[in-house]
Each structure stands twice: as C-alpha cells, then as structure tokens.
Length: 403
Image (cartoon, rainbow, N blue to C red; front, side, top):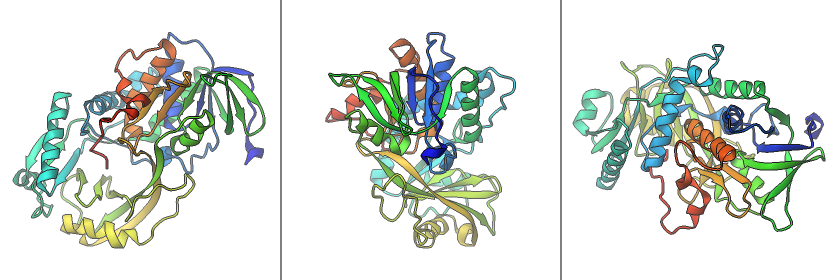
C-alpha cells in the first residue's frame, strides 16, 4: 500500500485534516472559502477509492426528527443547503440536488415508545420542524398498506425529510476545495508529534516517513478516528458498528411513495426509485474492527424480510437485488457527534462519532468547524453542546432517535 502513497510537497500546513471522506471534503471547502482564513490546508486520505468509507456506504437520507434541539437545527440547515446546493457553492457548473421529500415515519408499539415520540414531537416543533404526531387511524388513512394492529401511533414529517444524491455533494466539495488551493494527499498519518507539555500537535508523520509541521489538526477519520485521537494521547468513546443495507424489488409495488419507515423491530425501509431500500443492524450489535465488513448472510431471511412482510404484507413476495455492509462510527455515550477543539490538546479538532447521521449533518457541522478554525468561535450555529467536554457530565443529552 505504501508504494502507492504520494509524498507531501510542503514542510508545513496551517491545517492538516486527517480523513478525506465527506467531512474532509466539506471542512476543507468551507474553510477554503472563509474570508477570515488565508492559510494552507492539507487533506490526507489513505484510500481514495473509499471502498470501506462511510461516505461510500451512506444511504443519503436527511431528517429533522431528532430528540435534541441541536440536532434538529443542524438538519434544518442541512436541508436548506442541499436544496440550494448550487447557489451555496456559487458555481454554475455545479448541478442542483433534488431532495426527495418522502419523509420519515417512526412507529410506536408500546405506551413508553409512544410517550417518547410525543416528547420528541414537542422538541421538534419548538425547533421549527414540521413533524406531525399521528394516531394509528391517521397513519392507516395516509398509508393503507401497513399492518398496524400492534401500532399505537407515530411521528411523520414530509417537509425537508427524504433522500438526496450525497455523492454529488461530496464530489463537488472535494473538487472545488482543490480549485480553492487545498492540497489532497494520498497517504496515511501514522504519528502525531506533540509539544513538550503535550498541549499541542506540532507535526504529522506519514507512512512514507515525512513529518510536516501542523498549525491545526482535524480528526475526520470516521471509524479510524479513535486511532488518530490515540496518537495525541486522547480517548474517543467511538466504535465501529455494522449496518446492513438491502435493495429489493416487490412483486406488488406500493401505489405511492413509501416514507422511510422505522419499525419497532429496528428494521427501516423506504422507496428507492423503482425499488425499495431497507436497513438494519445485525442480530447483535457489537463493536467490530474498522476493517471488518464480513456479512451475516442469514440476516435477510432470519430478521429483515420477516419484519418487512409483517409490517407491509405486499412485501411478502420480493426479490433481493443487492446488499452491502457499512459502519456507523458509533458514539457509545450519547450517540451525538463530537465536534470542536479538545481542551487538553488545544489545536486538535474533532469531527467524529456521528452514529449514522454524518452525511446529513455535514453541511452544518463542517461550516461550524471551519468557523472555529478561522475565527476561534462558532459564528452561525453554536455547536458547543457537541463539544467533547460534555461527555464527562453525568447528564449528557442522549440522542434517542437513532436508527
């Protein structure tokens, strides 16, 4: 692998971003266009094929149905950014991105689950989301194909929730960041050089042996972010968790778009063009190695398809078209992103632990990280509630709406 790596051209960069997936691209683009920043930026990515990156395995969805206000606000900006993508990038070459607004539908089958959805509805409404709390009869009226005998109610939102072309967003962020002067390097960071008192990252050493001086270090390495943090003597409560995605055809297609339906079984399913996309965790959900993409080939027959057919009887007869295994960089403390500077190693910036929400949150979080680097503060949306210091608090606000 090292024989394919390139060598850095400069001896120093003002910002080194370790990890060139969606966050490396987004942060570098936002920072390169910030008028308050005129420094040099290096993005380091060890595998430009992105074969095992979350960016390649994303289902490209966005929702505002979260249990914490900060996550609702993050996704509201994300939806606006996606819908105005060409205008935000300010380049006529950039294609428009269509947000397919089929919405999300969370179903509750117990009184406790229903009460949680009602609480989340209140949070979402207060934060400006258009969530509706529906009774079982209201769900049946809108979507008569569900079997709802065990369902007590649900939350639904058809405004700015759905799926979009995340690959286009990634490609253009990466392309325009390069045009703005950002250097992209195919290599692997293997060591961080710290100051004598351990409070700053002073250099980054690569697999090919070179060390470059570093003004600010951004950790955007996805499931490999724990490894990068350890190089600075820091611990992240993040672990890779497998998530399975299946594409299937139905012998009896539904007569309308299927919202991304979150079933109490843990299986979720939505329209995907002429087909359908369904996702699930495994039978168990243990942490795995970042390189472990081995599939449980019995999961479809044992768990996923039975849950589908039980909830939507028209899916009794389906044909599996494709499937893949991806990873969440799962924050085991509160399932929220970890963003911003570390209080101990002060020029070490986190962009980690998205727990499956990384793509949809990338516009707002990358913008905020760029603001922090350029100005020393968040200027638009205050992301300090997502700082790592919160994880030492006894009542860190857990995000309950994790799929």
